[in-house]
Image (cartoon, rainbow, N blue to C red; front, side, top):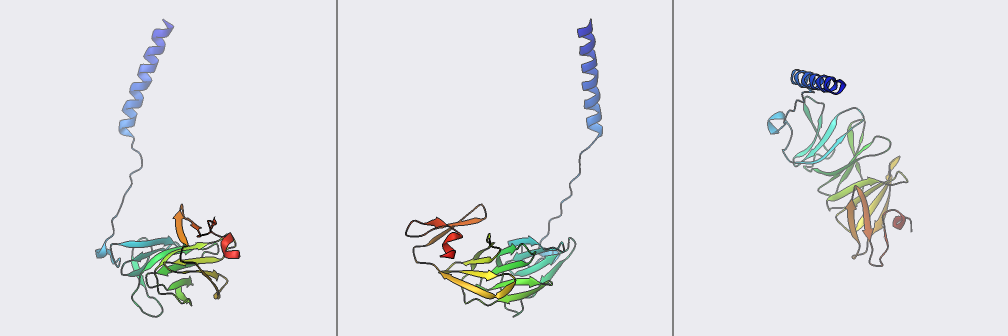
Length: 190
């Protein structure tokens, strides 16, 4: 008798839950797709990063834009050259760094792009912040550049031998030299 009562209670609760779940609904997620008709410079996006002020900085094949959640605003490079960002970084101070297809590098200061003076014509593969909080710029070439983020004019250049291969895994670069040494930071301190 008790077992039959438990079965009825269980069946009643199950039916009530099924009826209530049909009435209740979860979150409704709304999506909006943005294309070139929304003033985004290009439909192909190379880089995407959010600044401290909430803007999304979007690097496309036709340049850089800021997005406030409603509108896209074009961002001019200081020298007005047509280029596009291929990599980006937000450092520990919240400064945004952009590496471009023509080898140039910029950082944002009060939402204005400032150039970094490096002699490089190869596309920037990645920009990372090391454990020392310095910025490491890795182009598709024979050098790695180390930049002091508090004094961007302080740049160290580390040449790579021709057998040096750079791999990127889980956002941390790892490389192996011809001598078999593997690492990413310790090598630059030698």
